[in-house]
Length: 265
Image (cartoon, rainbow, N blue to C red):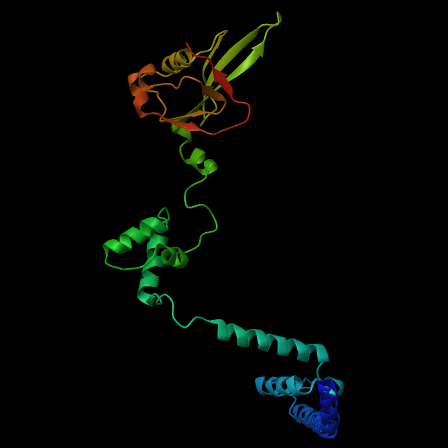
C-alpha cells in the first residue's frame, strides 16, 4: 500500500519535475552563452561564481550534464566533489583546542634552532621555560627549522678536519707456510698514510695490544684520536694499560662485520 502511494505521488509530480528540469537546462545554456560572450583571446575563463552556479544546479538537477558544452561533464563532477570535501573539512575543524603560538615566540624558536644547530626540541623547550614561556615540547618541534642533512659533521668531514690527529689500528690474520696462524697488528697515521707500527704474535691479548700502542708512539707523537675498526676485546682495556698520555686519547669505534675478538689474559 505504501509503495503504491509513493508511485502515485511520483506520477503526479512528474509534470512539474520535468518542467523544472527543462528550466534548469535552459538556465545552463543561457549562462554558457554569457560566459562565451566575455571570453578573451579565444579562451573561455570561468570565475568562481560561474563554478558555484553550475555546481548548485548540478546538485539539484544532474541531467544538466547533457547540455554542457564549454566544459566536460567530468570537470563539473570534480568541482562538486572538491566543494563537498572543502565543506566537510571546514565543518570538521575543532572550535576549541590548544591556544595558538604567538608570532614572536615562533620567530624566537626558529632563531634559536638556526643559531644552535646541535640543539634539539628538548633543549630549546628547556631554555624557553627558563625565559618564562609556557609552551609544549611538541609545539617547539613543530616550529623548529627543518634541516635536510644531519646537524653534526659526518664521518668523512671529521676525518678531513682531524686527519693529523688521528691514527688507526687493525689486527688481521696471516697464514704461514706451515698452516699456522699469526696475528699481525698495524698502526697507521691517517694524514699521510704512514706505517707507524707493525708486529706479529701467536697469542694476541688485550694487554699485548695496549703494550704495542704504548711502544708505537713516543711522548711527543701521541694522537688525539684512535680508530679501531676490527678489534673487539672480550676484556675491555682500561686506562691503566696505556701510557700516561693515553688519558687524552679518545677511541673512535666504527662497527664493521667480522670483527676479531681478543682472548683474555
